[in-house]
Image: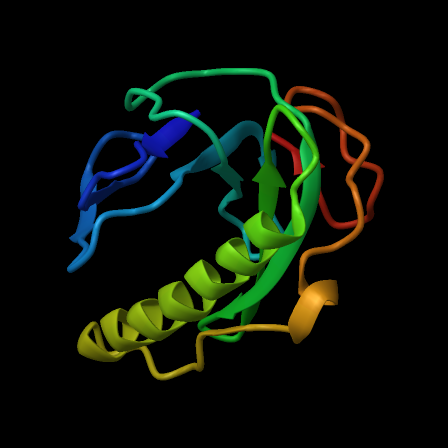
Length: 148
C-alpha cells in the first residue's frame, strides 16, 4: 500500500496520519506490505520504482531485493520493488536515497528525543540484496517476518 507517492513531501503512516514533512520530495513511491510485520514490529516497508502512484494504492509487484537499515537500534528492512529487474544505475540511486533517508530519519529521531542510531547497513552493490522471489501478498521465506 502506497503511503508516500513519488514526488510527495508528506510521510503518512498506513492509517493516513502525517508522520513528518520531508525537506525534499521522495523520489520513489514508498509504503508497506499491510499483511506483514517487519523485524522492528511495524508493517514491512516497501519502495516501489516506477510512475507516481496515489496514496492508498494497493498493488502486486515483484520485490527484487531489500535494503536493511537500523532504526532506533532495530532492524528495519525495506523491500525494493519494480515491474522489471533493477539496473545497476537504479541500484545506485536507491542506495543513495537510503543513505540520505537514514541521515534525515536520524535527525528526526534526535529531535523527538530518541537516541538510538539510525543507519543503512552494508556497503556498495551488495547493500541491495539479491532478488526476493516473491511478490506482495505472498509469504516471505525468512524467519522473523510474521503475517498480521
